[in-house]
Amino acid sequence: MPTSLRSPRPRTLAAGGLALLLALPVAGFAAGVPAKPAANAAEQPLTGGSRIAAVVNGDVITDADIANRARLFAISTGLPMSPDVIVRLRPQIRGQLIDERLRVQEAQKRKIIIQDAQIAGAIKDIETRNGMQPGALRAKLASDGVSTRTLIDQIRAQLAWSQMLRDSVSDRLNVSPAEIKEQQALVAARAGQTEYRVAEIFIPVDDPANTADAQHFAETVITELHAGAPFPLVAAQFSQTQSALEGGELGWVQTNQLDPAVAQIVTQMPVGAVSNPVRVPGGFSVIALKGKREIGRDLATMVSLRQAFFAFAVPLTDPQNPTDQQRSELAKAHAAQASIKGCDQMEAFAKSNNTPSHPINPGDVRTDTINPPAFRQLLETIPVGKPTEPLISRDGIAVITVCSREQKNVGEVTSAEIEHRLVGERVEMLSRQMMRDLHRKATIDLRNGGV
Image (cartoon, rainbow, N blue to C red):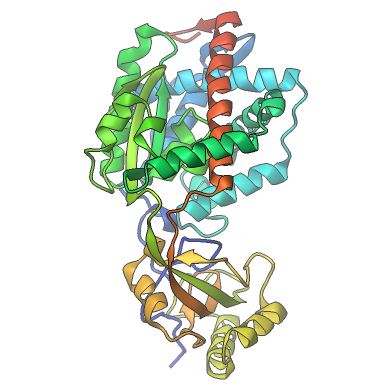
């Protein structure tokens, strides 16, 4: 009987830099399978693909551009694609594409060039935040008939705009020790009060006449989030803030650091909830509450790890019928599990065997961020220094050793966190101001009926 490579307890970890992925079979978008019936997305008719939808300072946006972006959104959320869906998404998508053209045009004027490696890194970050293996996002788009260029163009525009903003305010990005000290004093004065880990999808309203369209789009987004669409992916595609490529993450914030309307809602939300559209200056915000803690106090179990990885030459698609090379890697993993004693040996072994894309040391990992719960429990209970059983994924097998496990207070706000927040606030303020100026100066011709 041929050897099977089915893992008895499939596990995944999407924290730190761990290159450990869910063993097959995997459900949902991360495995390249739509969360909702969307298998025929590529077969749906997209009418008027070559018609002009808008002209932005001479640059043309076609109905095909809008349809491709709508399909990208539909794939990531599991929303079934149809002409009706495109009609519902059209106003907001057209507005987003107009903003992107304005940003790219401005970046080009300033001779800002985004390298392919930067785009590849951004795609990898999106995959990591969503528990996807490397290349899974591109493969998913290809399987559903969406050109990777649609995603690349969007990411290129975001990166170029971010670079331009940072170049524009470089002289104002230096946060002084006095500013940090002032913020630390404010934090100390609020010790014991609650702070919130918040993520945001910001949907702008550049013209009061578009308010209803923006709110309708926000409600569509919320419906799909409630149905299980991954917040980081939706934020990366549609949030119009500088946190978009970070999955909309604002980090740990206090109510006085939020818009008053957002702060009022956040204080009433349970952890894990997604808000209704919140009217804020410049548009609507959709808020996800990811955590609560006392300021200055947040006890967590932290583990340090080392991992060896045995790569497959080809992806594992049928665990019951592995290739000879996959069987060989499983045998090596079992041998490593049996022979390695402690973290030093695991690190030495991994240095001789791991590929560059699979880090030996993923850094300290907070266990309550690890999913699924079975894997979290494993890392919280396995004896320190003892290797795990081989953990099988599509692209290889991991064996992990927990080097240390301790309770830490991670609620203390560091100088680096304060500096990061202050810089982000300054860049975001400049971004909104510059977008208003670009719209005011631009020549934008909307072709509602197409040409």
